[in-house]
Length: 307
DNA sequence: CCCCAGGCAGCGC
DNA sequence: GCGCTGCATGGG
Image (cartoon, rainbow, N blue to C red; front, top):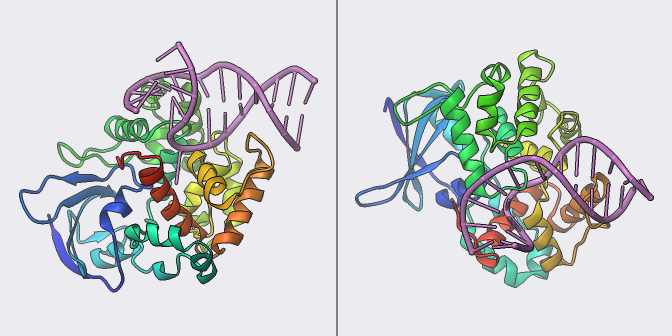
């Protein structure tokens, strides 16, 4: 550990829910003998440890005093989304119409949407099609183990686009749950980034509009409406993105009686449904509100485990 | 054995 | 345009 600091919180923050609500796949909870648990992750090639010491203080330590060109404190507040206006995640009219639901979700008040590394998020959600979280996490760790650079005995940097572009296809297939189509799609988009055909940084808000970012992503094989929205929300800072997966589809129908026009989600019925959800939840923070509902639905209605 | 997991693409109609 | 199916594997 090179650098360590205290971070003052000025609004409610839920570290555990933020790291384990299904938007980050590589964070670990370290055993702590006593006191508060320490969470560890690898971001931009540096080891980051965070502990929620009290309701108003985080302790952050890292293997570097700068991450992604920012001083540790500035990086951590940005990465964790501490500036998000969580008190307004749900509009006044939503709270008025759904008071019981709003009250139930308050146990996760303080859950943020992380601003993660665009490339890692892109590949992670490309690995997430129709699989459970345990299989998704396994794929991400294998990719890091086989192709990323080792930082220490136990920690691996997530691979770069170059490393995946020139990866041995059979080794890559081993990492992607033996799905050769997925492996090939990951290679294709990694090659496009290596060749500078695709620049994810240009798609980060506000460098590009939400519509342009998702249209660009959709032009690559293996990326559909849902994955494009996940990448936009968790990796590209587009807070109006509203990913619709099987869980979201279920709760939209169960709680709000919102249904897509077709039984299998086509592009147009997906977009139509997402727009209806934005009208219900508000456009500016639809992603955060949807993420909170997603987390609550999975854990408390479906009874799934966090990790 | 079944069905479902943070889906996508290709096909027939 | 819509609906079905293959892709893969672990867990309930």
